[in-house]
Image 1 (cartoon, rainbow, N blue to C red):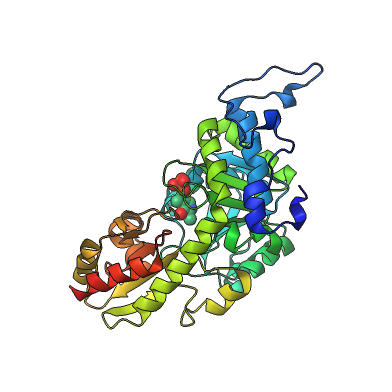
Image 2: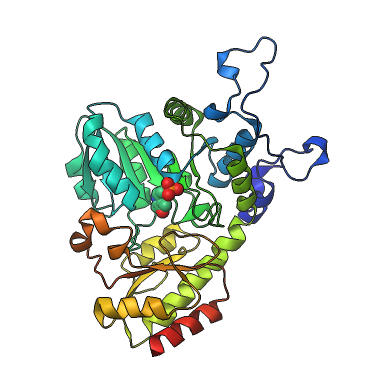
Length: 383
Ligand SMILES: *Cc1c(COP(=O)(O)O)cnc(C)c1O
């Protein structure tokens, strides 16, 4: 089908699917095989081998991912961290410098804090909304600019289009972790990002049952990422690739439901007397609301808030909730609730520095009925 002209919901179902389908199968099969016969006259570059991500089920997923992010091509990875570290390794050599804008996902912060130095990389953490700070951080050896579409757990939205333009102007490779926004809400290649990374463990798969990641971009840049993944061994198993390709079919429906649930719950909590503060980019009171409204088609599944009454009130509230699981992931069909200061961000020293207090609760909306989620929070707040 002509992918360019279809809307996102249609692309999620049909994008990258071979037509006519092989053997008439509506569903692309799982090729579990590790290796495939060489065609006559083929070269070493044509080798189809599972670790290299060139098994047909992996290639099928790559086509589907590329269509959804509007990229030339894609590579699937064994996890979100494999996507981010693969992208960074593909761009940075010993002696290179990275500008990193944001309060990063815990795994990304930890990777930079614990591995950059031994790899010979230097980096500066900057405010992703403050272009003057980027200018100041810029050095002759700066090679890349890394940001996240929505930060965790304070759900801030940086000056993303400006960051992509800044990187382009200074010859840096711009890399964005688009896990929190998903391509339903934001397609970073449209504003000029070079590499888009995902933890597909989250919303892309959506069912909390596989670890996976993805990087999308130009053929040249993804070729470099694929070479890194081949060298380190970070490809995605074909069975997980099949499940992820299946999950993508309902991505638009799931993310829209999550957007709606998160916004409805944010509004409910914002007007509740037992809640001190709510942060969700869909609320007009959020400091980045206007920027998010201009960039995004939806505001995402995550909100964070502080109950009046501090850490003990937060702990009690989580215990009283019946629907959301007390667990620290996001983007699945089931709602999750967690306290980042005692979970994902515990070891980061970011707890005081970034204002992530022990009273902060992060909520990841699932696809339940918003009335039921609100009723659950209402009963929990009664207590
Ligand atoms: C979960 C997550 C990651 C890491 O993904 P894994 O699949 O757990 O390796 C990276 N970035 C963000 C924003 C995430 O939420």
